[in-house]
Amino acid sequence: MNRRLPATLRELSECFRSKSLDPLTFTEHTLRRASNCTKRLNAFIRIASQSALEQAEASAQRHRSGSTLGPLDGATIAVKDNFCTRNVATTCASRMLESFVPTYSATVWDRLERGGAVLVGKTNMDQFGMGSGTVDSIFGPTRNCWSESLEGERFR
Image (cartoon, rainbow, N blue to C red):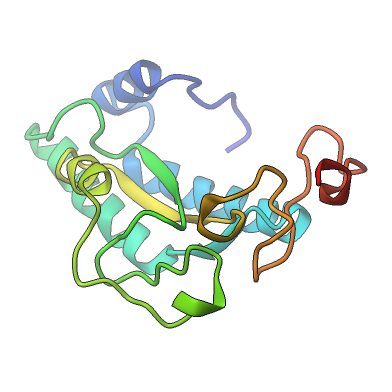
């Protein structure tokens, strides 16, 4: 996929509607980008490849049959690791919750999921969201995508 990707949800939804792009292809591309981003920037704590592809395939089927769930259907999203997502580990970037796998989802993710959004993964953060430079994460600091030389320690 070497073309410009849709920049807004409205554009993405229109691409799906016109069949110039399908949710599965878009999700595969997003997963590749997330994986590359993680290697370079440490932005993701976990990438949910298998479930994302399953969600994208279900979305693609809905789009083919004309029974979409709305404008979010097939849109990829990543959430901070402090939002509970059913059956996906949620650590809040803390050792204290290292093995916590919720049996429920936060309302915000539940609503996105019911709208057909595809969860790509959980993003890195300071422990419990208490900080500004992602320097206090058990998964290590993130780097700035615009200038990788900006180190988190400078923000303490």
